[in-house]
Length: 455
Ligand SMILES: *Cc1c(COP(=O)(O)O)cnc(C)c1O
Image 1: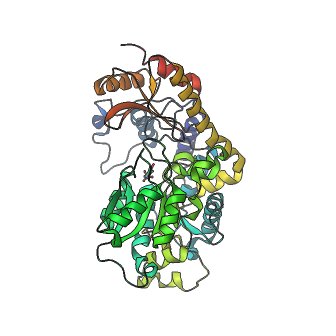
Image 2: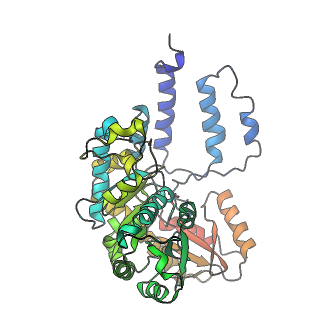
Image 3: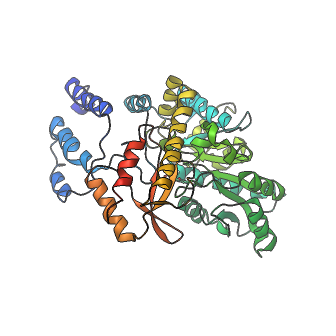
């Protein structure tokens, strides 16, 4: 007889589902605290042994002692790094994905999952202005997406260059590219050619200059542009880069992990993204500004067949997956094989809420950033470092150095007013707001700004 742990347990289901209900209905979500409790390790001591524990007790331990030692990134007062604001529909459906053991690997196993995920990817591709026929898959994060796309850039270079790939391929990037791009290139054994840029923005002109003057120019096989840098929300000159990439036969990848939401859904930001539609591949993280739960990044290719040629895994036990050419296997479009159907929470939420709701929610983040920057400009004790980049605002408190920012930041969290960590901008420590949660209000921003007024 199967052990009890595989049998449906009504009491445990009630217990966990009511904890889910409770968490889903908390409004607003409090910030809570990071790993401050010194006793965290002790809470767990001896918990896992030969015999099990009562589910209610383990759940209580987690909810009361551990979950409270996590800063809630879905709090509207969380303005550090990149916050999260998953829709209720996406969270609920994520639970359903788990309960159904939905596997997202192949058409053979999971056609119904694949068509739904592909519908969501199709919406993103269309919003981006990609042509019919574009496609890809959902991966765990922007880092996995960048790695998978750049692998295709590397392995299709010979094709674009008339048969010969350089021995030491290079990809052109700006110094402001996300660290995951450098890491991906390192994994791939592809070198990085850093393009010097002004005002932190990669331009077609600067790229052209490097490709004219650098002795290694013939080894450059691709370029990565960023559509919304994580630190400052800066969008590279996508149209200029697209021109140069087309001219030189370079793979043009856009890292839009954060800013892609504005590119795809925000009418007020469109001017910045001209040229986005000309990329060979791009990523956008629904777990950031498209309001999906962790972990979910969308990876899209203009010509998915190129990606398939690179990523399809050949193993005898997998041959059956590839016998019918019309069938779409998500495993063919990134370096993964087995994968969670992590695009489904986004799909469900898009279907339930509609695209207009997404447009409004993304615009809300842009709007609060504009209003916050007006408040900073008119305040006497703080200054705007630069105009807001998408929904990211950098500000300084004249006279403060790093220790002042650090002390202020800890106090802000201690008082549960905000989670705002300092960043570095051109060598200077400054404060940074990353807006995204539609419930972040200008009053919350005012409270945070007021807290910077003291000595
Ligand atoms: C967040 C981010 C990444 C990394 O994405 P993960 O989902 O954290 O792996 C890459 N590029 C940019 C621009 C980002 O903002």
